Image (cartoon, rainbow, N blue to C red; front, side, top):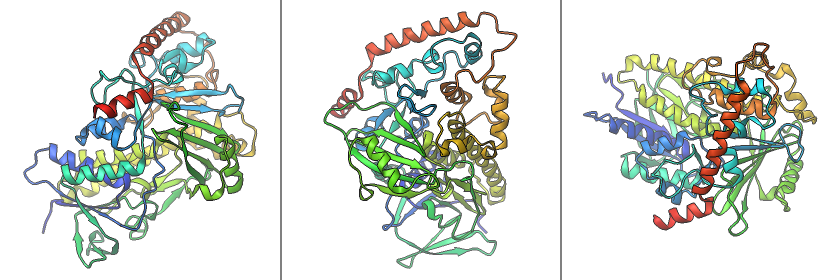
Length: 509
């Protein structure tokens, strides 16, 4: 009886399926094993790509490099632009001047000391992010994080990407098939065949062929062909915590040569928020909202007002959102990755980074013998249950700190809708600033710096000054401010706007 895992079958293409296939294939290839596991991706010809997730985390740079992809190829073929964080507009009071950044660069001296402690004790006039990080100012100047002298995946500032999700999926498909040896089968799965021990033995596809495997990865989207329809693994809804359950998405044209914002714009509305992502030829825009507090027609009208043009329900793609995740992601010899594992909302672009983390976890801890599959599966489930719960808390943080007065926001401030872990953290942060020790894992999706940016972006005085103030707090803050100003001056002379840099990259390609 075969005891090694030699055949991996991925069900579903799209970004999740092809990213997973590529990460695994590249990892196996680098390990120089005498016999590499075979990776087969089965993709239905009838299911379109969701094509909404257009924002990434900086981890995507490491992933693309891991796959052996040139950054210039990725940018030109996927209509990618550079993302340096998110700008939150109207999330606190809704006034015109109400905005703050969650940048991708860590606060000044973050690896050495927690300057947030000095910030809350010195009570400076400047906001937290602009005081301790140069990236917000660079975003305000609409500059890219790198210039033509930088090598692939390098820059003056940390960055991620905005991209065309459909083109990205097609790009990954071509690369994984041609360069990494992933076998691509275009077919519908007609039947899932079980083994005597309850594992999945094979898939029967519509041309009558049988595709057997040792490990099956479900990237079939919300359908959850394996994890849901075959294994019936329960779905844990968190709609009682995160209320947004609808989205209206649309592609808006850019006026010719209009500036491409190097950040995601997230604008609060009465019952949700609007995302605005700039690509070279268009803006990916959408309204995420709660159907309990706003109808579809009202949501589209709000989107029309934001876009300053008439938009009808026929112009948008409407999506249902059931915020939540699986009770188990790895069951028997099946792992759910992507939308089959769960979905919350596109705030803070957490979906794709979870795909990356899941695939890297499997690659790094791949069970070389069937006897250890339950051990690796248990570790995977524990790790990702924690990560999903942490993301829920982080997203909820954006809502509970708001002072907006519509019923949607008032309900978010109702502590009965908070998790116990968030209640505990917020009570702690009244007296102590967020720091590494507040979290259980070394590899968090969002580090303590992200919590600092959101907490003090929305409530600069949330943490009470200490009665025993650190010595020289104001002097420390002044030195940090001077350093950040120097960086802004230096970078503003060395960086291009997005269109100029993209034009150079395309012409040099």
